[in-house]
Image (cartoon, rainbow over all chains, first blue to last red; front, top):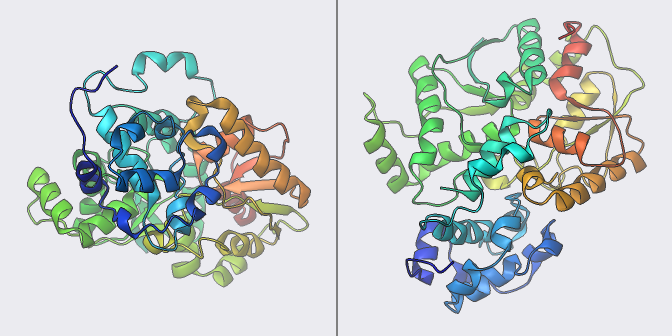
Length: 130
Length: 262
């Protein structure tokens, strides 16, 4: 589905509050990421592509939905870049657009089991839909 | 001593043990936990976007209610603690977020992050003290090897959470020691359990849980304790290796002699 609204690198920087120009591409964030194998783009690439203004590529990445928000990347960044905030800001620019919710409530019943805590549903809906 | 207490959505439903054993133990230690009448769900995840205001409001309402009572706010669930603590930091340090949130809320007095948010474990460590806790134990858990599972949300980002050393924490091990049990350290204790990804990518969540369980098993753990309902779910349900996983409040209640069958 094509996006309705054009998103710029400035939009992402404004939402994230992050200074991506501080990133020196050391890769420590991606090395720390516990879900690295599941992502087509990795935390250090989010910082690099954002600096190049390649926001559309970031918006198409599956990493937006594979990030665990565990903050390992942000914790271990030696330059205080906080890659988790960049990934979150890009995800917001996608799911805020009409028809771009990644998870919808009608898909939840098939995912339920008896032990599943409410916290899982609340968290996933906050991450994946608007 | 009276504190405001924010239980959160899951502690009223799937994680009743975390809540009830926490309350029973607090009462035994002379702590009165007062639950605000109209708290709302924190949303489970901290809204990292700086322009996200509505998703911060439920936390601010709970924080402002505690301020009105002149009390610190105690949390138990790791996720609630993470969200409330970071939103409170925003209200202290980010003037734009603070102003926009107050514009929505229209409180009698604007809220500016005055409340102190304390996790129950911080209450035990910093206000009660693990030495006092140790002397209150009537049923020491002697000879039990317990592995602390910290996960992400209590620790990171360290400069915001201020909970413990984010790479080499010791608070839960010290807690285990105070109960008379033996703490077991293992490499995966502060790595992610898979979180909400259990709904979106089960395979990846299973890999995370197995890495944690097998690491704890290799170190000789007979039990794992956690403060997070979603961690407990993932560690119990998503790994092939099986070790009993309990809330830390359950072992606390057992050691204090106030555990009841639920």
